[in-house]
Length: 169
Image (cartoon, rainbow, N blue to C red; front, side, top):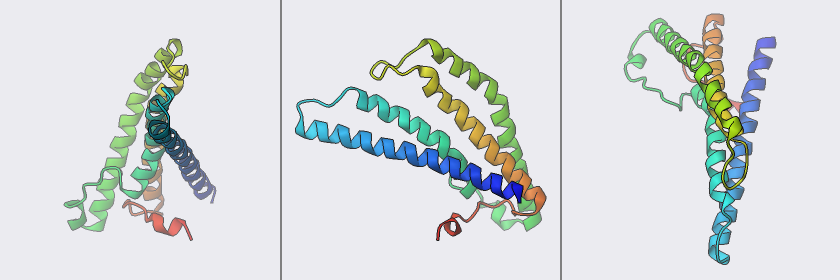
């Protein structure tokens, strides 16, 4: 029960982050299009904010994509195998993904720390906030990989991508 609530909370947090980034992206692009259409020039900061929000969109959305199999899911061969073998291969794949993310966390944190001394040219935002998207992406992806492993071990999941259509009424 606690695990299910934690799992749902992580999904909700990623959805909120993805939705917020997407909302900011839409507003920024609309400002840019409106400015280019009706004004002599568009604000300089819109292009930079668009790039930054795309990074946050990817960082929060990667776990959700991993969860429902839309990240990268080459399963042509796997689908022909028995369910036990599919489950084992999915578990191994999730373990490799989690290990890869764990290995990259330290270099990603170093990358974030480099940004403390830099600011973005148009917005003046400290770049460690922007570089943090790489760290967030690795944490979220690794977390969803570990959660898939736990769900396979617990017997809650067969390891296949989750059907997210039942999440919404």
